[in-house]
Image (tube, rainbow over all chains, first blue to last red; front, side, top):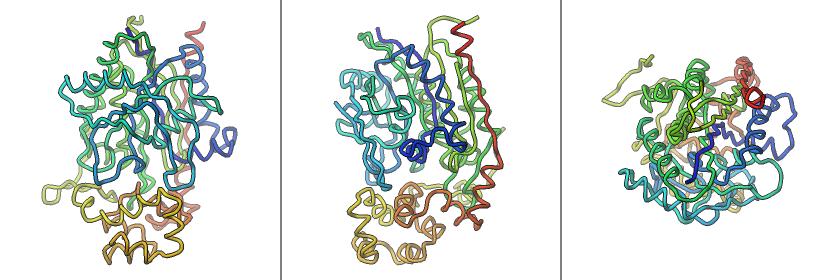
Length: 284
Length: 133
């Protein structure tokens, strides 16, 4: 049976990709954020997961407003990042896991979700930046990818509870898969930030800390706010916490925090990186 | 604690925060379609060569064209622009999201950056070493 070893939650600000391209990891502005990945690297080196299931939102690379899925699950043999308008295209391809993708699709539809299924799909910085952060360098990524996109762009957005329940259905699907893969779940985006309007630059430390405090022990606390509450609290892009909520939902075992890093600012964003462990054991 | 906010004609409004909903998606379609095309370097070059021609090709409304001509971000949002797509246009104009923030809030760029840096916060927890021991 496949097993969910843990979850990695991280901001995906495009500027991080620029900083990686320029080698600014030790620059005083960027260092406090990149240092947050030291425990993630240590954990990945120990655990060596085979598959990453990534909950993220597309920012206008693969999906446009002509057809905007609320939930979309990748089922491709390979995914690529491409130029999103700023001339940066990450070169390393992402190998897919079609069998497990289709198993997840079968199971979540059986759980009465209705995702769009994508046999051809570009993944944007919301997948590429976290992968570059977790596996820096030029070598091929050492695991396969299953991307799950959530609409956080065009309202109405799915409710936090709906995202959490989707995550739970994905988690059950993974745990019912007969392969012996070790899986890591990703939730990308956030935390509080807002790019547009008179409130551009909005950051809410209290709300972010509320999320960080509750993510491992009591994720349902995050479901008390609806999507517009979250927009008001965390900013119009802070609503990307929906990806975190779905990812946390997928972790169905005993969950505890192994590491977290919260740093303001990265670009206009309150940035965070959290590593959670998922196990069958109950910890004392 | 739930935030308090106003409701106008059944639609909730959040101060300083455009909510990109179906109404915005409809009115902004042409502007956002043009910006989406800027994923392509050729289209970005084409815009630099012939801005009016590209706006004509995507059938932008006069309000949208005027907002683009004036580089007026708030007017682009008002005309249905979505910031994720507008960010691609902003790139052509040499503006990053911090420039956009300063333009929209009427702040000087340095003041906008300083306000973000003023949070000056890093909080780190690491239990992995404990686990190894």
